Structure formats: C-alpha cells, structure tokens
Length: 304
Ligand code: MLT
Ligand code: MN
Ligand code: ZN
Image 1 (cartoon, rainbow, N blue to C red):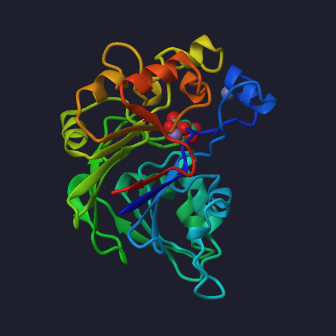
Image 2 (cartoon, rainbow, N blue to C red):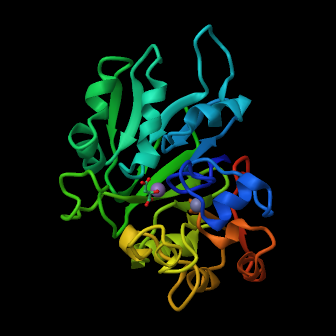
C-alpha cells in the first residue's frame, strides 16, 4: 500500500491568503526555513494507478497537477481518483468535490450519514453536484466495520468515531453525533500493516488510543503547538481544543500521547500556518525530532 500526502496544511493552507503571521509572512519573504503546504488531503493506492482520495481539499486541482500519477490517461477523459472518502464535512475537506464535477460518471463517495446530512443541508454540495456528474453515495458506519473500495483489493478502511463537532455551518454544530468526524484505520490485508489517520483529533478516546497502539504508522493532528496559539498570535479567540485539535506541547498533549505508542513512524499532519513546527530550524521542531516525531510535507510518501 502506498499513501501520498497531497496536502499537509490545515484549513487556509500555508501561507494563508490573508495571513501575515510570523510564519506566513516569513515564507512569503523568504526569511524562514519552511516550505509551502496545501490543504489537508491524502491518497491511497495499491498499484499506483487507482487512488482513493481521502478528503477533497479546495487545493485539489493544484494537488493533482503536482502529482502526475493521479493522471494515468487511459482514455480521453480519465483520472486515477477512483473514489473519495470524507472524514468530516469541514470546508477544507469537502469543497474540492466541486472541482471533480466534470467526471462522466457519478463520483463514488464514501461518508457517514452525519457528513452526508451536512452536505445535503448546511453546505448542499450533493444537490449542486447532482446537476453535474452526480454522486454515488456509499454510507460509512463509524463503528469500525471493514470498508472495501473497488478496485482496491487488499486495502480495508475502518472508521472510528471521534469526539468532536460538526462544522460551524452545520445545522447540528452544537449537537454532536457519532460520525460527525471519523478517524481512519487503513489496513493492508496482504502485509497486515496499518496506518491510523486522523487530521482532526481533539480528544483521545479509548478507541482512538487502541487504534493508535495497533498502527504501524500514525498520521495525526498536527494543527497547533499550544492550546492558546491562535489567541496569543491575535489570530482568533478560540483555544485549540475548542476547534477540535489537541495541541502538541504540554501535559496530555500529542507529544505525550505519541511517546506512549510504538508505531514505527509517527507523523503530524494538518498543520496550521501559525505552528512553529513549520520552521525547520525551530526549537519546537527539534523537540519533535528528539521524540521521533516527523512533520508531514506535501509530496511525502508512505509505503507499507
Ligand atoms: C479545522 O480543521 O479546524 C479546519 O481547518 C477549519 C476550516 O477549514 O475552516
Ligand atoms: Mn481542517
Ligand atoms: Zn499565518
């Protein structure tokens, strides 16, 4: 199994269009050691030809251009993207669906009832896409059942519900339900190896901890370094956990959690542009390295 990181940044990307924080400004002016990142998405393949896209980022067209393997060109209109699986209904994970509208057949789409509900109401992408390629709906139950997505033959996906919230636009934003957000165990049944992927992880439930413990590779929430990061930088009034993201530093933070698991690779993804770990020479990045934790970048590949 092969996983390609298409986009490793949180919503807004890096640099963010309207942001002049130390990182965004430093990247634009070339005064910090860092690389640009697009918004949150990965692709999973067995043969390098057919790819399941996990989340459809607003940057999807740039991501496809940057990764020619997604263009096998077997017909005059063709794509290597065989299906899309959504982990939540956040803007940075779903709006790329609109860019796939030129397909000639309905798009095979995998999501929970909660996510389809939001895409039928607060952000009615399903209704809009019905006027273009249409969507072939496949319901995911967030109960760990094995999901297979054709034509992938040896890959199984298992969705685990996360303790988090629906997006700000959702009619049930303040009434959380299982399936608003999922984590994903991606298992290569041929080798028995697995990846646990959760770009948004606000709290570590026993089920999430078990999934992280059994994974060979964890690819988890790297949004914020501190709980107060957005507030301290004057970028927002919300603390990290309020936004559904466990910060890396401090007691009970992601570094401490990752120290307790034995995965061969521990990788942070969905990194917000404010996060000091984006600077390759920062003390925060050095601390991650000392703990054996990597920072995802666009174009990174994981082979299991
Ligand atoms: C989040 O995960 O909190 C998002 O990046 C929010 C967004 O896309 O607006
Ligand atoms: Mn996000
Ligand atoms: Zn910024």
